[in-house]
Image (cartoon, rainbow, N blue to C red):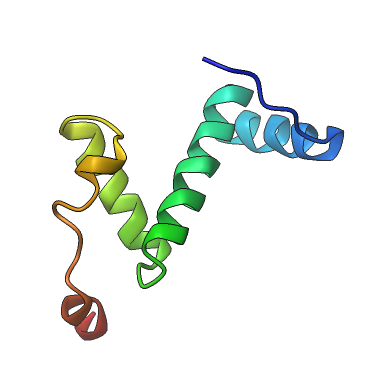
Length: 81
């Protein structure tokens, strides 16, 4: 585990969001990092798709980049939704 330096404003944003969503500051930061990473890796996914993917990851093997290529929503299914 390592340390990440963030601005005071981002720390406050994490504190407020984490409190509102019953998460610790670290848990909120990790959540936002997961969302951001998946958004960059899969720009075609909507936020709802990313949330569903995170749930499937949690039920499976955990959050590893190598496992992310499995079980992604098909782009044609997204357009139909």
